[in-house]
Amino acid sequence: MEDKVEVMAGETAQITCMFTTDEGLGGTTIQWFYVLPNKERQRIYNKEPMHEAAEQNTLFTHRISLNVNGTAAVLAIRDVGVRDNLEFICVIKTLTPEEAEGRTQLQVFKSPTFPTIEAVETGISVNEEAPSKIGSCRVKNGYPKPNITWYRNNMPLRNTPPEVVVTSSTTIESSGLFSVQSELTMKVKKEHKDAVFYCEVIYFVPGATKMTESQHINITVYYLPTEVNIWVESPKGKIKEGDTLELRCDNNGNYPSSITTIKHQNSEYSVENKTMVRTNVKRLDGGVYECTFEETDNFDEISGSTKVSVNYLESAVITPKDSIAVMEGEELKASCNALSSLQTSTTWFKNEKLVSKGNTLSVKSATLETAGMYKCVVTVPEMEGMKTSSTLQVNVKGSPQILGPDVQEVETYETTVNLTCSATGFPAPTIMWTTSDGKNLNALQTETEDGAQSVVTFKITSNVKVFCNASNDFGSKVVEFNIKTILNTTLTTITSMPTISTTTRSTTTISSDTVVHTTPTATTTTSTNTITDDTVQTPTKSPNIKKESKGFVIAIIIIAIFLLAILGSVLYFLYKKGRICGRSGKQDFSKRKSSKDNIVVEMKSDNTEEAILLGVNGEKQQPNDQ
Image: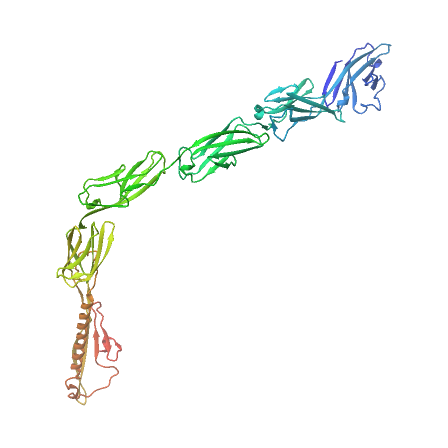
């Protein structure tokens, strides 16, 4: 028989007993026993030539069976447990008094649960004199008993009091399985603040040894700082007035019972999240800032400091101040300076254009064009956004100058014109308006940046010359405006009224009573004539001129002609009818009634060949009714 048979709990164990006999199975008895703790035997199975059965009321009564094959008798134990970890005996008997036996140790294994580890929730101070608990590790329900080993940073920890103390306890469960708990305590040092701790469980399985690791844990180690640092977190680089200053203070400790403050000159500032913020800093905010760490248990202090420089740029100052007046032809000089903690650069601008670089503005011979507003801009090249500026009004004394040519031609269709005269010079010139006939014109004058401007509005009836005279203490200047009026001839289309021509035809009829009746027939022809005037191209007007059309005069004349034509036609018609000049009383004709009058009017148009006949009473007649 084998010395031992290994099996996992819950499985079926098979213990084989090999034997030989000369009498065969018919004369052989096989018996199985296990050894009690008191070393006595307990039979659990008996096989005789004519009968076999498991012993009643034993641990194995319902879980065992025997299979004999030739010279091998195999005892099968189902659903083994840790209590089956016993020594089993196989006894072979024959008809002779001799008997033989063999022994096998059954070893049952059970893997434990996955280990659980718990770290201390509170931090541990390096100032503690006694070892501090790091954590505990527990594994349950293993067989044989598992072993627990502690590790720090992958290095096993041995029980070496008082630096390292490992305490273990074992519990035997009702099932016979083992549960083991281990607790680690040690003296903590600063270098343990980032250490990784875990426990390793070693347990046994059939034919091997296995190992499993718990989760890794960290501990919080409190230690006093040995160094305090303070630095400018923001802005990066140089600091200027108006910036927001953010100072950060930190140390290489993490002691919980502590106070951190920042001192500057005689002021003390609280620190939130290791940061102090000062807005809109001034140059006086520069200097040494000291950060102090104080431990509240023993009131030990440690500090560090840094120096802060706040750069500044004062307002630009121009000499002379505000404005300067120089004679035309003289030299212009001005200087611009701004006090700064850094190197500055100065530029001069006029009308947004660069005119000079450097602190001094110099013009050898001033002209009227030199006059104007100058802007001095002082910047700090090494710091973006650090800039100041100031302005200087430069006035050049001299005779006025009028913008534009000396003689200006103005053509207009309007009866009212607006003229503008702009003059430069210092002092500001006075502008007067006169006409060629010596008349003074009233005008509105306004001062400009480099002189004056005047606008005059007046009525004209013919060509005229107007003079703009600008003068000051140093002279005068005159500009002439030649104003020409232009006749407005606008494209006009005239449609004449219909012209009526009347033709009288006489028809004589002799009746039985020898009365002659004459019926005059009047034919009226209407034609339409279109008269088109030539188109006159008018010259482009000056911006100061307005339009005024005179076409309505021509329209009135045409209407008058049209009315005279109608009056002449009516008079001629009445003359033919005898209604004028007493003719109505000289005719003695007999009149016959007719259903329709015999006088018709024939209307013709230039646009159609059709003749429309109308009776005197306005009825439409066909041509065959005449």
